[in-house]
Length: 147
Image 1 (tube, rainbow, N blue to C red):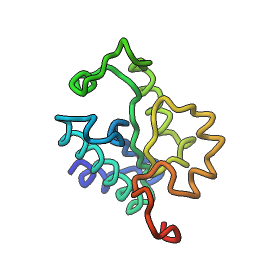
Image 2 (image 1 turned 135 degrees about the vertical axis):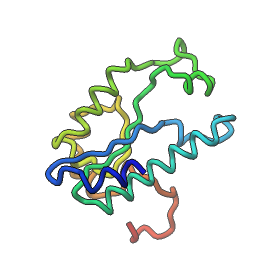
Image 3 (image 1 turned 60 degrees about the horizontal axis):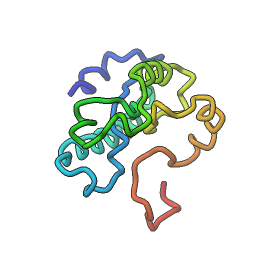
């Protein structure tokens, strides 16, 4: 609903819609007991944003996993901050500002992690843009010539 209201008013020279998602959505369901609604909604959000970007080429759209930040959902999922390399909340904040900049245009329609190296992403921009990297799909899709 927010996108529907935003699109007609979006600045045609530079507008961005960024969705915050979760990296755990790729983990097996057995590891995420009790989080089915949360994980399913995050996967749906990522795919929705891919379509939104494809259908609105003048809008920059991307999804971002904020990294390992201690939140209520992190704790509900059984996470223990002392056992993992945690990120500071400033990391996703700064990354999202960069992601909305023209320098990150090559990531349109992609799902990225805030703790990835920006310089390395930029170095691989041509490869990222030319394929299906960092998008959602089915591993083992039997029709490699499609997409």
